[in-house]
Image 1 (cartoon, one colour):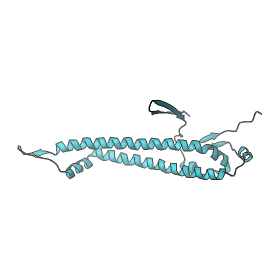
Image 2: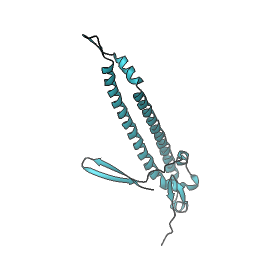
Image 3: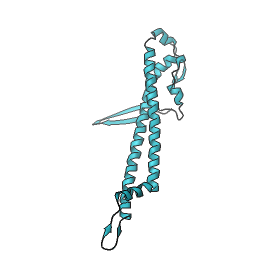
Image 4: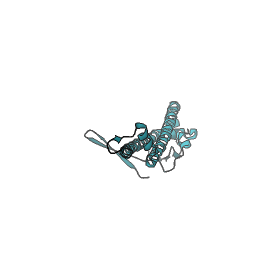
Length: 176
């Protein structure tokens, strides 16, 4: 799987962080389930899972902010359009629309309505990611509690090969 790079700028410093993203299809139930048959695998992969979900959460929050900004700009442009469009004149005097008339015209505009529905959809998606984050966080806390009683020998013997939390675990033979 191809690694993604996040470039972060803080003041005069630039940092590059790379990570492996989730697969295109993720079973949320599997990610939030504690696999007791491979508890050691859970212990060693939970930090990576938390990182992936945290990055996904940041991307979701960015999408919400972007769509909200785009919607606000569209509303402002439509408001100005309707303010001019709804203004009437009898030749000597101008009659301006009321705030309520202006708000109604903007709300009933098809593009504004579509934009608002899109915003609601993106918020819903972000809420799903947020829910996943908190479920993984709860899993992490339970695994942390369970891991306190594991001895080093149990740790070494308890690793099972396979994919857990979307991460492939392979055993490597000791050379010494």
